[in-house]
Length: 188
Length: 150
Image 1 (cartoon, rainbow over the protein chains, first blue to last red):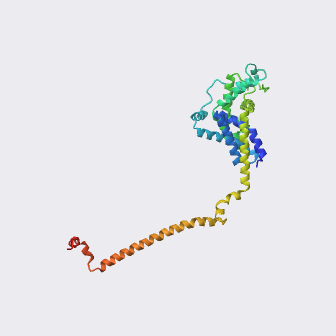
Image 2 (tube, each protein chain N blue to C red):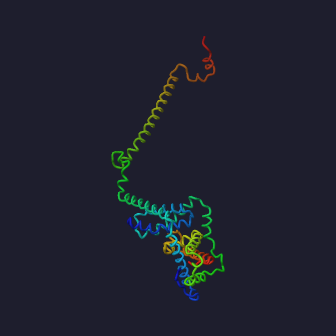
């Protein structure tokens, strides 16, 4: 069973990222705060007897469910349309070579200084905006896998889908981000 | 901004190498997102802190409830009925309903017996009367009864 301190430290470590994750989905600060608060309370009330090691996965799963609950309550049609777009093929730019782009981005980091023309804060804002524009499931898989640093199996458990779907969502998300950032001349 | 160096394009052709490239790119994006998330407005950070403290209060309350489940579960009804065993409280709740149903059945039985008794008395009176019962179906006798007596 996680102690009070372990639970508090965990919530403190995850709350800002959770807020951002919810904000990318619902695009409303108050709603995102409500979702995070709801998630924290659900975790604290229902899973207080679980060991500390289980908290991250439980938290992410509850956060995903709380976000979906919010959409159900709000009946936002655009969110449904957005979710449907996950089933569409990401191969709309046939001439786009992801490997070439990633290599170019990685290789140019040492010499290319984007801060010369655009401020650092603007770059971060642009990256955040591109992440926010990803289709919902792709964004969720990307953030859980690389931001929350869950492995593929844990991400699949949190999202309630197969590991293959997680890999597909992540790959498409990286592809879309690389293409969008390259178009803006931004290297993360 | 980032000193990550990438292998040459000729070397990066296998699926594993592609995965590595994608992962590195994704982790760099995630690192930038972390930078942004640390720069939350003070008001938002404060509201998150309050939410966290509320959650911790709920956690402490949940722990207390788990530590003393007996006190919560057996209080209500048993105390109202003098703290007796659980089966007795169920019997006490069912007895009034059974008594009500039995009373209604008894009342119905008494009413039926009274109706039978009344009908038997009428039949007996008719059969023992000087006038035969068939007289009541005779049209002439009915007319005679309607005729006023002078």
